[in-house]
Length: 220
Image 1 (cartoon, one colour):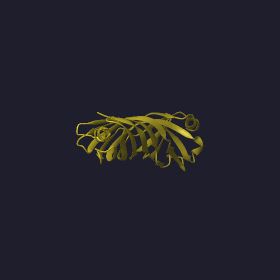
Image 2 (image 1 turned 90 degrees about the vertical axis):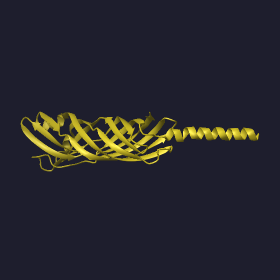
Image 3 (image 1 turned 30 degrees about the horizontal axis):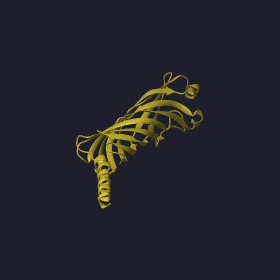
Image 4 (image 1 turned 180 degrees about the horizontal axis):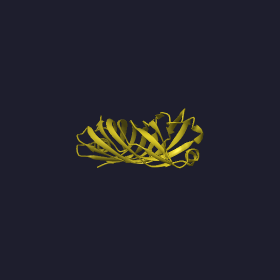
């Protein structure tokens, strides 16, 4: 009986070592690949649309998939790059709130982040990061309500550079797989140009979105 108990204890100890330490271990040269569902929530503010007193714009939220890659320089330091795109509505505010959606745009916001992983040998591995973001806006389209008010309109948004901050955690499932929760804040601003048959109007917009993500990942 005692022999069986000792054998069972040894088996449990071995399984614990297999599921906890190796599952969490990250060494220099390792890669983490994550697939997340991402909620993009702008914390926006804007000036007035030129020549339209009391006007303003707001940016709508979006949910989109995101793929990211982290490469470990050391056991604690990693560099993350994200790949994803969102589609956001631009809505009228103030004196043009009645137009509702005035345009839509797609964003491509590649971000490179230097991360510090606090407990690389644990099953629960929190991390924090600071990075830099470049956002390209593309496929801009004026809405029918905007064109009904101003006539045919071309919309263009300037690209943005900004800093980013990140907090997250990886939670081990087994030796290589884990679940992930991640929060990013990105400085993002643009100037939107509305060209209505030669009449040009501009508006400056601070978008500054929160990126709230949850997903799964694998260590390689």
